[in-house]
Structures are given as structure tokens and as C-alpha cells.
Image (cartoon, rainbow, N blue to C red):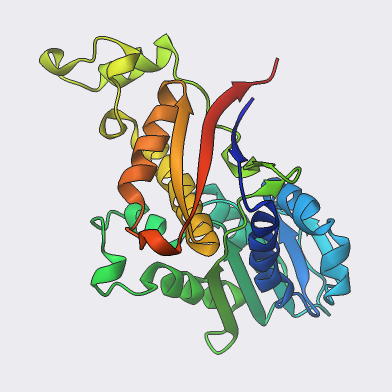
Length: 280
């Protein structure tokens, strides 16, 4: 398994505050709710706030695994879902299964993936959110939640919160939701080339760039980059990125292209080390 890590040379207290602010949005919706949370978010909650105890302190009546085999009792009308993934595919299936097996009248979903990345995942062109697409993907999912609850007059909310970090120490944080990111291997190059015309095949791993990656990996990288951008905006910092490895270099390059210009005089400068490491 691999995980991206980052070493911040400044503002460690700010990173923790960023994490706690993100979780504060979730805790504000926990009162009288049955909470369903995936493992990546559970790990982030543990390191940022101390774990599920914070949910109970905020008024949650139960905390359960994010699984199709889970549901809430008939006397529990509120469900709170906290996921680290896009609201697509298997994640949607699990939410639908839980809601259909429960008797909710009020559902709240928090996803750690920004709405901008959701738009990209649904084929919208880059920059669509700024061009007036608003929160259309989240709004459509709210309608689905009401359908699954069985009454369009019930209440559904879908929100994004930057729940991607687990602050392990004052200067080191990890991103559990991105544990599937793995250094590119020769086998990956063969897979990338299998979908390319003969004259456009890539000779070496060092020649792989963002645009040549599979769409699923592009979305995962873009989600990570969007999360980092949120962190940097919160901290008001100007970063210098250093990368170890090919995929880390691609991530750092996309981060540099993604970041919005910020006034030089108001920024704290930090160094950010991006690396992918493997557990044996």
C-alpha cells in the first residue's frame, strides 16, 4: 500500500486548525443522527479530533461502518454520511442501500471531494463551476436522496468538506483517502500505451505526463490537488514543491498549474515535499 505524505516547514498549528474546522462542519450536523463513515474519514477524524467520541459529544446516536450491510432503526429519522470519495459508482450504491433499508426523513452527506472535481468526473469542462454551474451535481444527488427516502418533501443536504488530512504529528500529515496512489511501474506504462496509437506510444516512464494518465487516476490526482489548494488558501501560504518520483512530479506539476495567484506580500512561504512510499 502507498500513501502520499507532506512535510510542512511552517504553520503546523494552522494545519491542525484546518482539519478541525473541516470536521467542525460535520460535527455541526451530527445531532440526533446515525453516522455512517468510511475508513479513510474515520482515520482522519481520529488524528484530527480524537475519534468517534467527538461525534457522540456532538449528539450522534450511533456511528456505523459505511457498508451496504448497515442500516438505521425505524425510530432513527436522521442519517449522516461521511465519505472520502466521489459520489459515483460504489459509493452511491452503498448510500442508496443504507437509505433504502432505513426510515430516514433527513439525510446529510459530506464528501471530501470538491464539487469542481465532481463536475470534471461528470464530463463538464474545466472551469465550469466558475461559469455558473453552481452546485448542480450536489443538488441532483439531494434529489436522489429524497427519492430513496420515499418522499420528495423530506430533507436532503450534500456538502463538501476538506476531510482529506490526518495530522499524525505537528509537522507530518498523511492523506488516507489517497492510499491507493502508487508509484508508476513498467506495467503501468504498458497499460497506458495499450490505449495509444503506435506513433504516439510513450518510450519511458519519465515521459508520462498528466494528460496521458487514465481518467480515474487523473480524477484522483485532481482531487488531491484541489484539497491541497484549499489548505494553502486557508493558511495563506505560497508553496515551493519538491517531488520524489515520477507520479509525485506529475502531482506537483498539476498543483502548480491549479493554484490561484495570491498577493506576494500577504503570504507565508513554506516548502512542501511530495512523495509516494510503499509499505512492505
